[in-house]
Image (cartoon, rainbow, N blue to C red; front, side, top):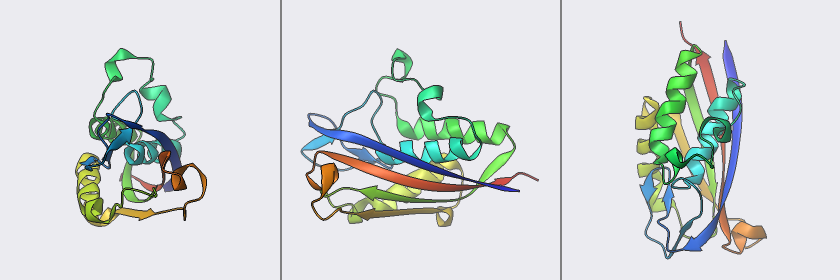
Length: 159
């Protein structure tokens, strides 16, 4: 039995924050605003995983009004979500994701993102796809006001 989930997340770019995407620190003059480290890619992936199991979203599991998650490392949260789906009898088949940002360019960081996500999820890197695109200067991402991410996850029943 397989289950498929989709996740989407967006965060606003602000000064004086680190930019962390897919667990990779990306040198840039802006970072993403959020209660945790605001790792937009990790958040989209976690929502895809939780959605595949009909377990809600990360806000239900790690509320942004809970001080315990202030500044939280999203790779650690991703490990927790992986454990949650494991407890429900599922394992990750594969993850396919896309980061949407006009700037900074992501190409040099995609390998690190894939490795970080694979490690946090306990899967081989071949099961994790990360792509990046711009929106040709359209919308909030094109205006460099924020960064978005989409993710799809296939979960397989453990045997």
